[in-house]
Structures are given as structure tokens and as C-alpha cells.
Image (cartoon, rainbow, N blue to C red):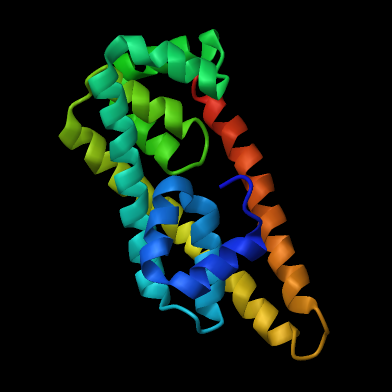
Length: 197
């Protein structure tokens, strides 16, 4: 996904539609949701379906991460940690927070965009009760997906209106949406790490 530009992603979505949208949301939900909502505001998709698929794709992806941790056990966590470049201190603080309040950490991470991969795999590794895990990824996902859909739809609506008067405005606004999301990602990652302090 990191090698796919927003323009290529937009083409994939408009050509293949909802099935590919769901698959992409399982792999990389946030940016796919923003692009899909952007296209929905231009009339390519139904925004309610985009919202539903965003939540569904996120939940499926999170469950896969949980299963990786659950089935892999403690031996999988060091490998994931190394692959994701997570520091030992961060992982230890994450484990400590799980023992204090596992539901709070899942909800907090889910409603932001930082440390989700390592957090959900850790939840499986520590065998957090699955019903509690699902409840909190749904609650957090509702908040996060709502925000992403609103952002994408707003930028798409603005692009549609302004491009009638300013040439290339749509491209510039779409690029602005991507930059906005990247900035938000870094902010949320920093914010999420603060809970581990």
C-alpha cells in the first residue's frame, strides 16, 4: 500500500468498486477511507456504504492482528516488534497498561492511528478476552471511521465546488487532504505514545 499513490488508489477504487474498497480497508483503512469518502462526495460511491465498509474492514483487520498474536503466542511478539521497529521500552509500557486496563488501551489506540498493529497483536498474545477486544475496537472504530469519512467527504465537496471556478483546484485540495492525514497520523502516534508514559 505504501507504494500506491493516492491517484492510483483512486483509480483502483473507481474501477473495481466496493469489493476492492473493503479489501483495501482491511490492509490500510484510514487512507482508503479518506479517498473513498472523497470520491463519494463526487458521486462515485454511497457515503453510508463507505462508512459501513470502513468499520467492517477495520474490524476484520484488527481481528486478524489479534489472531496472529493469539496463535503465535509470546514467541511472535519479538518478531513483530523488530519488524515494526517498536522499542523495548514502548512494548514494556504497553504490556503494563494492558495489565492495568486492557479495554482502555484498545479503545484509545483504536480511536487514534498510532501503535495499532503492535497493540492488537499484543492483545492476542496476552489472551485478552475476545469479547472485550471486539467491543472496544468497534467503539473506537466508530469514532475513527466517522472522523475519516467526514474529512474525506468535506475535502471532496470543497474540491467539487471550488474546481468550478479555479482550474486544478480539485487536485490541490485532494493533495491537501493527503497532507492533512499524514500530519494527523504523526500527531496521533505521538499522542498515543503519551499514554504509555
